[in-house]
Image 1 (tube, rainbow, N blue to C red):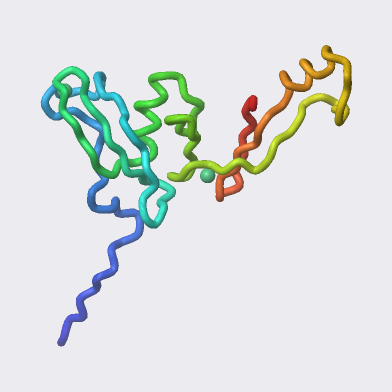
Image 2: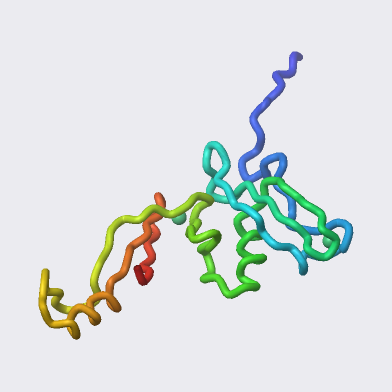
Length: 142
Ligand SMILES: [Zn+2]
Ligand SMILES: [Zn+2]
């Protein structure tokens, strides 16, 4: 009986190229500094393309890695969990979040005023809203 080969990769299998962030020479990721984080083409919710250097032995690495691994490296430096902050960009679901708008936390924000105290207050409370395609939003001081 003929066998039909099935080229479909089982779902959940890691994509080829996804590797752990690790310096093979030093046997640790302790000295790793991320150089870049790029979305894959097409963007993936789990994987990003990264480049990094181990500053201990000066070895450069570049490959796809899981979001979780990248977060682990960045979280050592106090990043909010679930969001990668890198180079002024915030990455969620494997791609940079887009600015969805700006907002004010003040109960009432006058359009224009000559009162410098009110202006200062508004600047302090102004925020920008970043939105991910999954609907995740976060507010940052602008
Ligand atoms: Zn190293
Ligand atoms: Zn997201």
